[in-house]
Image 1 (tube, rainbow, N blue to C red):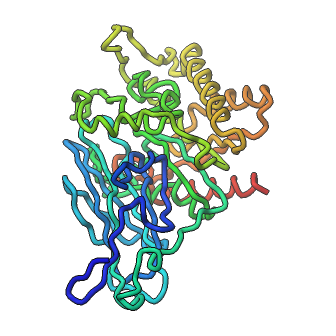
Image 2 (image 1 turned 90 degrees about the vertical axis):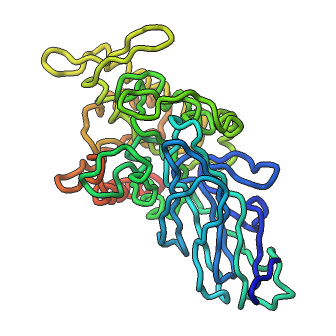
Length: 405
């Protein structure tokens, strides 16, 4: 225990916080008790009898800094940018230490494989215990209480919409920067809250099922689904992004990110997929040339503006393979493909993939058409804003509630 100016503190490495709860696909704790987080919505929650709390975070970046959100007793109360280096951040103070408080700290920023230095490590928790118990009796196991797991776990797989791009910031903001991402306003986070479920995010802005928005076939999320956080190794190089760099810094973290994910660690009760929007966009964007082979990739439109059948079939087959992979890794989960916030162009092909899975004997795969974004519901980056995400969250919560009956 630490003492300062007549106050009592307990300081514990994140790994050793009694009753700590982790969120997201995270690796095992490091030898010094720290936790590295990659995906949006990843982080920790701790609870106990304390009047104030701090967390020591270590962050680095060259272009895309990390932001975090703080929730106190379930309510979103703060969001801030992280400085480079290892620093303490005050999360809350002035609370009543005679009753249990809970604090959740989540990464707001998606995994930024473009930035070779992008990293976030959660190291140490410190709480003020003044008023919680006699000073001589205060120990970590007397201050902290366990944060229980929810009855159900939902995995959300998606693109920029699921990463929360555009859910914060003014409508006119168009810069592609970390500031316009937050997990707290997303359909996925809100759906989990409505269902009182635990959650994890697997999402990347611009990525698709067969290819990305710019026809880059390397940026298909199914290629990395079985990994802890494969996109940290991918190095997105599409035109228009300022961070076209070599893959170098944070090598240890990136090696961990590319490791196979242990799906048995926290089995999902449902996997909700929100992909297809960027595949749709690829039909209207320029071709992509593989820098290593010189092969040109382009999803084509017919002269009448409809999707080329051969290229649409590439999407369908990729969706079929992805559903098979999701089932392999989540044998007991419901699988729901939820799509439509920014158009329904790929719906028929998603339905074909779902029917193919059903024909193979998988009766726990279904489709949900999400409510489309309405005029005036735009957020920053021309993405669906908070009202659109609220309606989508309601739709997903209602769907899963019905399927779980």
